[in-house]
Length: 83
Image (tube, rainbow, N blue to C red; front, side, top):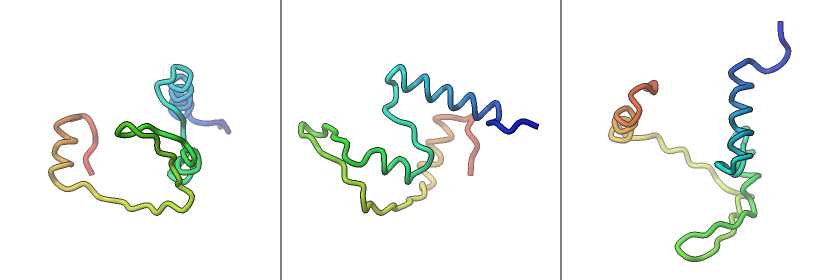
């Protein structure tokens, strides 16, 4: 039995590493908390002005998609599993 990541996990990691190298993405996060830590203090341009993100005490509000959003998701990607 192998103690390392599965083939699909290695594939995902290498795809993420490649995307980082190609500058297709800015970062890779292991979970939501990791994402909030990594983006904290980053500056972004929005509506012609620069905003510095402060995610230190950010609260997370999960919003479930309504039926229209779920329908559009299926139409946009019929191969994706539905919930």
